Image (cartoon, rainbow, N blue to C red; front, side, top):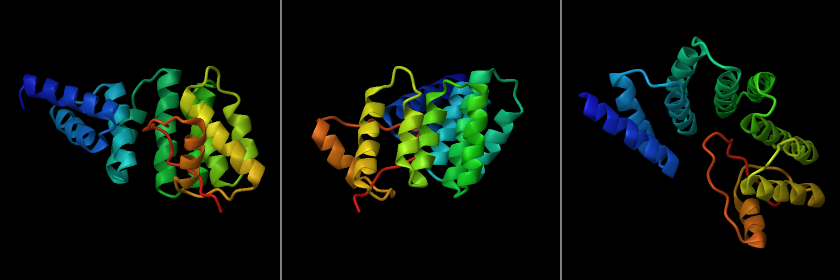
Length: 193
């Protein structure tokens, strides 16, 4: 691979990642990484795509390599968020919670860590605790407001928390908006029981 091909693959990976085409992002991040080790941000995005596509062994290798690097507290928090998501995707809820707690130790304001800890609370059918956690986020984005509406509806109607998108679709219709994909977030939606 030439330097120009590397730059083209990396640019394509970044653009695909931002556009939500994680399969294309994974393919191009892999091409670029095979040529030269990616920078931290690109490595984190690459790990996120691997986790989201259940390529956990490959994600584990990348996360282990990143763990050995000298990182700022915010970077260490982002890394631990990904470790938490990897654990959750592997079925290890306790491991996910521990990794997210570590992320919050490094960066108390990590919205990704708080948001995903709230998702774990939802998995434990604790919508009130999830709402309390989300209330700690300063300057929340519109997606968070919609998510809080959904959780509040679940708490008010004693809806069983489950993994599906029907409940979210109902709330989205009420407020006339859409929720953008968040590659760092656990896929946690609600089903109306």
